[in-house]
Length: 388
Image 1: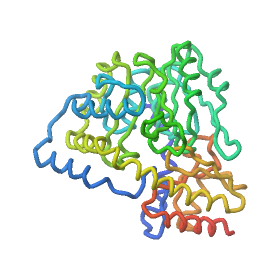
Image 2: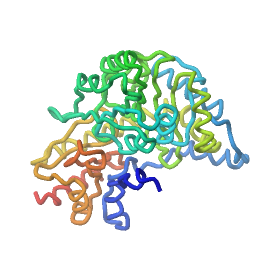
Image 3: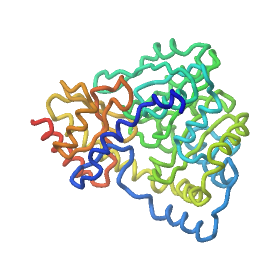
């Protein structure tokens, strides 16, 4: 085994969850998924595909009709684009790994905005790259980026800038002006941008294009087709398809063949029946997404005031995503605290330390709950765990 792989840390979220998965009395909010099943019409499309015998390989880059549908979907949100800029992948995290494989090699420098889901910063490390971390910082009830600090960190030596916005775990979201400044700087330094925008539709701000569907600001709003930009997306969050493992990349046309080769060497292709489910999910997005986002807003607006009412808590208000991020005064070991909440209060949360040292002392609470009443129950258990 490579020593680098041996030294990769295990998932601290999974470590907490393993302490409570066998307990039916635990209210679990630790994983990044809600408790709503995939809509029936999406599941039916997969069943129909299997019944028709679609159990063979597809094109490396995905079914043409799915790529066309995704091009239309993304183009309606941002700038028009064609299927020659779309590659279908076996999950969003697979899209991110393939983006790294096509761009990054041993000894390269990657700059990452953190805290962030740990898989993102582990991927370039696995490939032998060096990761420089630029931290968000909590200020006035939200996490903020020092744009000057980020731009100073990105130099001609920087191969890739990795940005996740809306951000997991903090809910921080880039503004379009910040994206334009970052893109202009990366054009000067020759740096590629890998943007994880899987939460763009789970957005509570007002940054949608005039007359268009609501979405968080995207680098696709300001970039040209041939810019050094890859944007990763997933069906997991906005389409309630976490277990299906389906995603896609938006990329410059010049990279399409290379990405197709990497898909061949990784998974060959996404399963056809899963792609059929993804196709109808995209086609039905206009009917399903507004109610999903409205429900998540209700969940957010149920949980956050209840947390803010507890003494000794600092709570960051998320602009996007599906997480509340907070810390308790005096609690500096988030992993130990999260385990204690499982054991003593029957409450399952993700420790901030899972997302990097910048988030130590914080806890992440996934508020994507079918019943907002579960969130209220969870806050009461937190109160008990804090002995308030």
